[in-house]
Length: 332
Image (cartoon, one colour):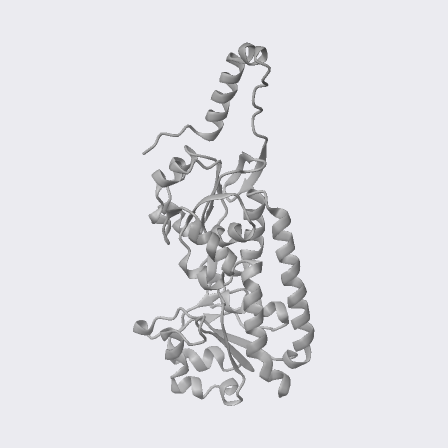
């Protein structure tokens, strides 16, 4: 592994060298280099000092699509295969061209590769439960580390704002947020009368067929949270909050389907990017219990693509998918 001085130590060494050689530099007519400006930034575990304008950023986890879209000065990223279908052609080209310094999981962090790209800021965007798989102290010996990880799924809005801010790209973030909110407002007006008074439920993509369970999502979870931005109301809540996504989703047995979704006037369910259901969702759709639900009998069931969007730019695709899925309500 290449040795690397801690960022603040390296700055102190550079300043000492500049002072030591100041006379010679002055005689040659050159001025000593100024130290990079810094600022205090709040992260998940406190406050850190980071560059005011980072020039070499490494991003992992949920920070990857955020900082690609924000046009941050990236020099290395973790892989983010789950988000590739949501990327624009331009962002996908950026993703493909960047050095991969970590894998899909936090445990696949390549510390030597990170040191090699010489970052001046590392943004870690992994959930707190898996943060233990990352050697944060080792990363801090390379550059300042901003840990900004997800909590509940709907928190991507605030999460992406903070990640963009850390990378010095708040202006780009604000533009994407404004475009998203404008589009969501238009769809809210379009579907206001159609969804008024309807109680929605959602079936997510992560049930376990082998255990005979399905994924029931509530307000703020992956499936509902973007749809809620167009005025849809999801009813109910988890029986027991277990933290993170466990506060807004649960895994009942398939036998509990009527109890879980029997009150729904309409049901949305997650499908893959090509519009087909995953095995876990198909398991629910093929169930006789599903076919007996009031919402299913009434024909008010709607497949939704791109439910895992976690940036404003990618969520624009989700809004398009929601518009396409809910269109039959306008004719009813």
